[in-house]
Length: 112
Ligand SMILES: [Zn+2]
Image (cartoon, rainbow, N blue to C red; front, side, top):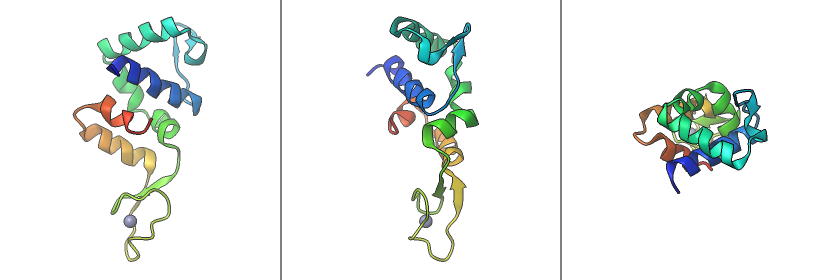
């Protein structure tokens, strides 16, 4: 898959889960396939997708509003780290990983 196709699928998933996305008054879910294609290629060329994927609204829509154990990486209630589970909202934990990854679209692709 090209970066464009992957980002389109990523945005499809986030919008389906509640992310509001608009361009020139057209909502993502109402845009035609052709329009989405141009929209995504614009977002990539202008690097504007970066501000979308680093927003809390995106993180919540893409990864849900559950939590994750930072010590072992388990989603939800941790039963590995009896003494010191270290919880963080999954969206924030993933945004931190996303900030560290060299290929952000590839990182997001793992959760499609
Ligand atoms: Zn744990």
